[in-house]
Structure formats: structure tokens, C-alpha cells
Image (cartoon, rainbow, N blue to C red; front, side, top):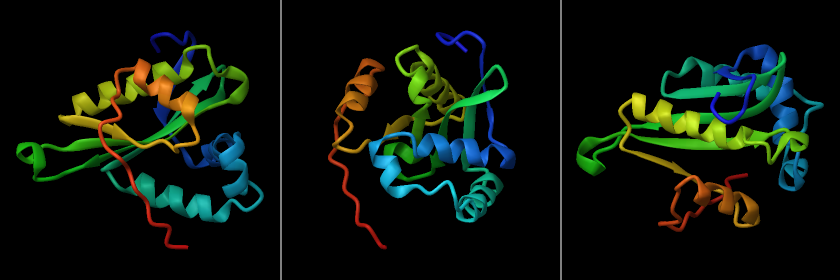
Length: 154
């Protein structure tokens, strides 16, 4: 993978779920909302994501270890002359490997995969608290052109 020697991006497998959950929990926001001791909800969600061709959950693997992850979702729509857009979610890199180009390579992989799928736009959201992540995405060419909103249902 460009910028991250020895790293391979591949489709996630069921046995990767514990490592993915650990990555999701490996920051201040994730620690408050993820629970790696109770894997059943994550395994159920994995099965749903993996079964849907519009979704692609991937891991970045280095020396046989999962060191990063993201989910790519293709959203069909009528806007932009009926073009699909790609949504990038849950980008995570192992905390001890951040700053080494792995996140950059992983997101650029997702951009190229989106292009190959014929998407017209790649979009993502990032918590307002993740100011370093905002700078990271801006360096990759993403523009904060919209204000995102969420309505928690639980």
C-alpha cells in the first residue's frame, strides 16, 4: 500500500471483529461507547454489513496483525445526475502506529475503490472533537463543505 510499506488492505473477516472493536475503542471517544467484552452485537452487525454488497468493511494488515480499519458504503441517489456517492466511516489506525502514513494510505485506498465503483463523490463525517482528524482529512483534499447533523435514537 502506497505510503505504508508491508501493509495490505483486505476485506474484513468474522475473525477480525475483536481486533476491529479494539481499534474502535482505542481513543477517548471510542472508550466511552465501545465494549470489547461483549462481542455478540458486533458479530451480528458484521454479518449484516458483510452480506450487503453496498458495504465493504476492510482492515489494514501488517505482519499478520490488523492495524487499521474503515467501512466504505456506496449510496445510490438521484442527485449529481443519478451518481452514487461513497461514505467512509469508522476510520481507525492503531494508536501506536499513527503518524506513519497508514491512515493516509487507508483513506486513499478507499478513494480509489470509490472511483473504481463509479462514485462521483466521497464523503465522511468526523466528530467536532476530533480536530486532528479534521486537519488529516483536509491534507488529503477533503473540504468541510457541509454541516453534518445526527439525531441519536437510543
